[in-house]
Image (tube, rainbow, N blue to C red; front, side, top):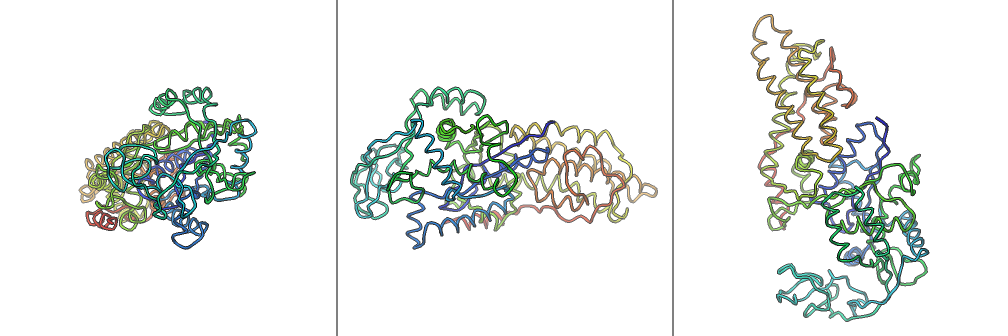
Length: 546
């Protein structure tokens, strides 16, 4: 198998709030896939960044009495701490508020402008006369023009679901100052997306997207592509558009450029070459993991800007569905709007990594984190099956056989069956069918436990002259555990590290499992994962209420 060169990205978290379990679905999915690729011997880099521009950040910083730069720096620290504690292993985590991002934003803009893909026209927008700023739709509230519900945003009603323009909102007021918005004209810059319709139709039907996404895009093509507003007026926290005094790049323009900026930062700190991964015609692989809510942007706008500025487009974009908790949208009142840190205060991060893996497929179906099922699944599969194999076998080897595994593999056919599963499991990982991979692994875990149950080493050890048989049975069980933990390593990196210490090996290696550990010294077994208790989940829910 030839060595692949792969660059992977996830959508950028916004630097205006905390990481929550909905965010983590994407980062865990991506991290598992990246770790798997590395275990296959491929070169694989995973970059990300904070999405650090926009009106909300500017206003929040103003409210806190600090500069936006101070706000995003503090948020970045918390984001990176959360990611690290969930074992998300970025090659580089950066910020869109960086010189690398400024450089590529201006470069892409200038290339698009020079090629005739940027247009200017005057539009009318809601304007706060007290704060002297144009207002995004989410910063205007009033009464829904359809059902009359009060305290609704300027673009849609959360009561009846109606969508409308801000001009239709009744008794509108600025969320920033409380003032009544006025209409004001302003010149805006637009990326002429419709010019790329033919190229995009070809690209979106060339295997770069999941079928569900391609089908959705076909509907949007039928409706007709729209020019994309890429500018905002002063005051705004972001990068100024070259050649203007009061125009800034809208956050949606420089956010995806954050992928390129983050990778450029990685290149500057290593021997990697940027053009190897982003130059047109590059033979390396580039993948984006995103949520289905930003498919239009990532599968149409972003590839088109890359085409128009002479950069390569991604090999594929992998979209995932939304996360619900206990079958419902995450809710603070129910205690199910759970932040990453709140989870970490009560529960092992690897439990969530496993449950997400168990639920994830290559499709864009929504995923439900049912907390009772989560508890039972982790307790049954990881603690009750996988850890159980090692815990019930290790004491025999440690106490009776001086920590040394047998020199013989007593059931070579059984061991070979476990090893032979590696091809199927690898295929599931590659295709992002993590749930299928987990089920295949747990079927093997069931066989290992059944083997131990059938042989009953705890009884045999009581019979004189059968010590060697017990040694071989328990040694095989530990070798089967080693195979299973190798397959689970992309999902459970911390537990894998603890297992490596127990097995006294440098690394759980995909190729190494072809040969069992024979006449090999192991270390004393320490608990690898404890059961999830109801009290832990209750504490997490209680801490999330507000």
